[in-house]
Image (cartoon, rainbow, N blue to C red; front, side):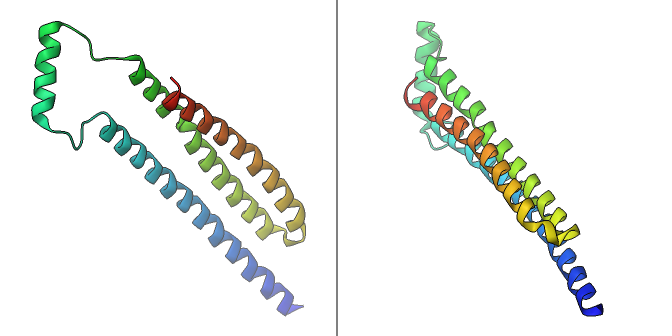
Length: 144
């Protein structure tokens, strides 16, 4: 009896540590994704890695002609960036669900099969919203 109790305590600690790991790894992945999206948009709009003489010449020409530099393509890229927020939401939601599932299995190891099935269904639903966001972002970038 004592050996069985000791095994349950070890499994609870394992799932508690797994819960913490899932939360932190999800947060780190979300931050890295956000940094990459910001960096890609800065590179695309020429804020980074562009010759400054061309920027000054084009700015002077725009001021002389009186044209605006805002285009429909720019709004499409902005919309794609907003749609990319769906990726972050799905990732955070899946991480939270996995952490709670690990906590539930730690509390009740006998229900592991049922908890796993429900977590897989929930992850599939969350992943479908991320895929919809991805499709919308790709359409805005390449079609609009």
